[in-house]
Image (cartoon, rainbow over all chains, first blue to last red; front, side):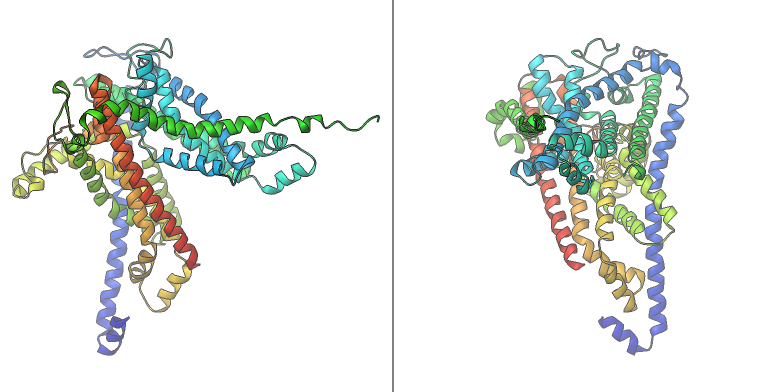
Amino acid sequence: MKSYQQNFFSGSVRKTSFLRLFRNRFLSGLCIALSLLTLVPLFSIVILVIRNGLPLLNLNLFTQLPPAPGLDGGGFGNAILGTLVMVGISLLLSVPLGVLSAIYINEYAPVSAMASAVRFVAKLLTGIPSIICGVFAFAAVVMTSHHFSAIAGGVALAILILPIILLTTEQALLGVSAAHREASFGVGATPFQTIWRIVLPDAMPAIMTGIMLAVSRAAGETAPVLFTALFSQNWIRSVLEPTASLSVLIYNFASLPYAYHIKLAWSASLVLVTLVTLTNILAQVIFSPKHR
Amino acid sequence: MAGPVTCEYRRRPDLFRATCFLASVLTILLLVFIFGEILTKAWPAIHRFGFGFITGVQWSPNREVFGVLPVLIGTAASSLLALLIALPLGMAIALFLSEDFLPESVRQIIRFVVELLAAIPSVVYGLWGIFVVIPIVQQFGTVLSEHFGFLPIFAGPAYGNSLLTASLVLALMVLPTITAISRSSLVAVPYSLREGSYALGATRWETILGVILPTASPGIVASAILAFGRAMGETMAVAMLIGNSQRLSWSLLSPSNTLSALLANQFAEADGIQVSALMYAAVILVLMTLVVNLAGEMVLRQTQRATAGLR
């Protein structure tokens, strides 16, 4: 405020106003330049993943096994299958738990110690690093069964996505209008009938969005499966043995000194990024405004 | 119709409610189980090494000597450096998205791009880092250490797999967190405050620096704290880029290590007391991220309360 008064009486209004204007323009330019600067690394990632990943991309990648070190040819069909299997296991474990918990804390006991406890747990779980999920699965599954396995990887991923599913389901249930519930109770429906026939169908698109987001997150994660499912050169035969996954394949092959394996890592990145982006977009399409 | 309407089903116990209740109990027990399991498996190491684990500088599984001080320093340093790089960029994008410098369509594209950054898997960042960032850091690092080698942070030979490389990629990875949270706290600044400032004759940037940023500052601080927490827990990209060395060094251009990268690298081949020591390291990592995240959440909650009062 003081400086404005000085400017006003000092007679150099024109000069200071030029300075102010210049500073204004300069900072705007700087802000825009910095924002656009972040486009550079992103474009670099996307372009490199496409350029290095495309040359090898053909059907063999999806149907063949990785080559032995130093050899060419082959693909990573087992890794794609392994990723799908482990994401499937994690969904089987966490969707019932997350959705039912969300129903309890939103429909049956919204204001209770239990509800705040569950919300607190979900918040804490979102905050812990993904590798801790792997550490837990290692302690709870690998150390007790003495085997690296797809089950252990699935358990680790389930812990990772449980909070996502729980919190998005809660938001989905909150989005169902109270009038629907009241009308249902008004015609004599029991709480179960109201939830099953009125609330859940209405909230389903949003719940599916949450599940798709969880799939996209789980498919891209490496740390939880790195030392729980480990890796395998072969097709998965049972969920009780070490299993390959796309993300661990990228990690393992990226540091190998063989050109072909590095190309495979880039192709796997292309497949993984496409998978993750597609599920992400699919998630937003399912939850389009016309459903609300 | 003969007889009253039967309402027998209404008197049956609500099994669905019981199932949902059970799921909630399981969710809570799960957290207890997770922490309990990791603590139990870490107990032999906690019992044997005690506090010396945190102050020790040696990590040699063969001799059963375990100390994580260099790794703790590496974790803090890489996350802090990443934050220093990401904060100005994140602030610029948040301002860019909340102010009307450019038309809405351009802003939509930038927002989409930043969201895309968040969706790219960590391991792909690592792969990209190996082939793009490492050569760049190697080249610039050599020049830096030649000319500024007298500064301890640039001293010694320059490596591609270094603290700086990991921090650069980490910065990119925490950018979406910073942008999203600071943007929402910038948007929450009431429009009347802007109008008041413009009415006094302030330029756009005098308004931003004098009115909007100070009002939104708690939210920006919260975004920085939460981004710091994310950077500490980030594993794969760091494990692929930081060089995994437990040697203490001042130089940004020398290899280092972080807690999560240590876990990622050693768990698969560990056995005996090493597993326990790694579990101990995991306990420390959990505690550090929990403290940072709780601090961030608390600041964020304070902010929301404060800006709600302004309306």
